[in-house]
Length: 80
Image 1: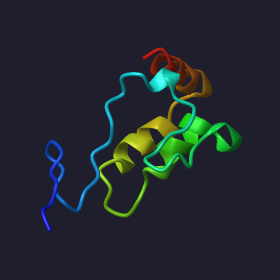
Image 2 (image 1 turned 90 degrees about the vertical axis):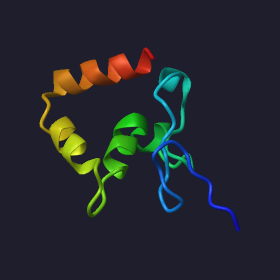
Image 3 (image 1 turned 30 degrees about the horizontal axis):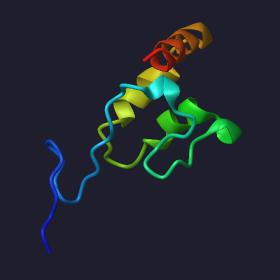
Image 4 (image 1 turned 45 degrees about the vertical axis):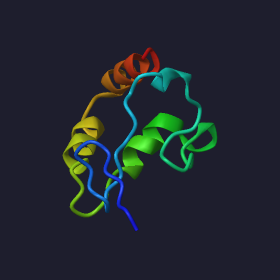
């Protein structure tokens, strides 16, 4: 069996899609489990957390933003 590589992601890793077109999506994550019914983009951000994940620092920074800063960031991402 051949292992497929995507960018710097190895065969046991998942490379996320670029952010282009993010504002056109309704469902997020590779399996679409984050959507309008459960918080959408914010839920997708929080779901990236896991033991040893490189995303943990980014999620922590996001969580420390004020409500207005979070909204500004979400508005920017939806404009992509």
